[in-house]
Image (cartoon, rainbow, N blue to C red; front, side, top):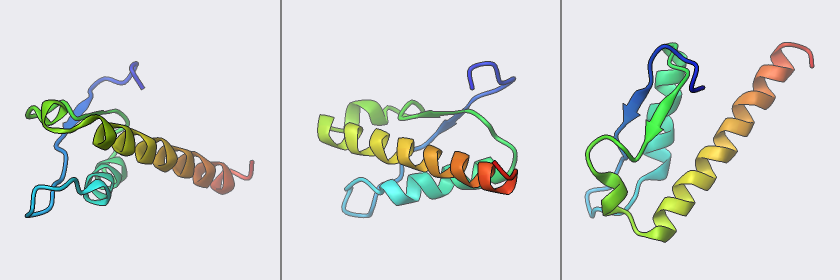
Length: 81
């Protein structure tokens, strides 16, 4: 991913009560991926990294790892691997 021509800083989604909206963040990243974006920077656009506690950061990263694994598995199925 770091060899990509550009990297998109993705805003972290929050609910109205200011709790973390992980699915909203993932949905936004999926939409960017469908538009051709191959590399994103998570929690680095408007200071979200400092707004999240450690548990939230870990939960977000773990969900993103699972999402990436699902994308690769789907690509492998499509490619007959």
